Image 1 (tube, rainbow, N blue to C red):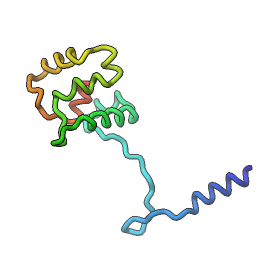
Image 2 (cartoon, one colour):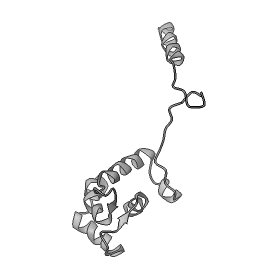
Image 3 (cartoon, rainbow, N blue to C red):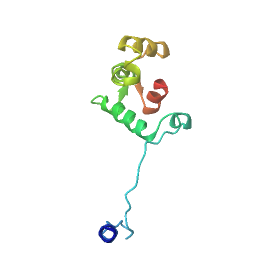
Image 4 (cartoon, rainbow, N blue to C red):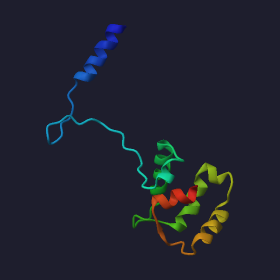
Length: 115
């Protein structure tokens, strides 16, 4: 059994790897969600950030942007909000911040509001 595992690991390590333009071996890397404000990074795990980013991007309009008006429907899909608030309650809270529901927002604004 040890011989088979060693042989398998050896084959894995010996397989050809793609090379970059400089002739160096490309190593697969983990690319997480980067947030410029550290206060927004710390309350979330990378798994949560990737999930939230995916949900955020899923509501983009055809113009490629997300507006404040898109948020209530998005928040209702998130379990933590749907258990506590209705879509109308979320709209009311967002209206208090700014009346312009057509305002384009970025992912970091979405994270701030979700906190």
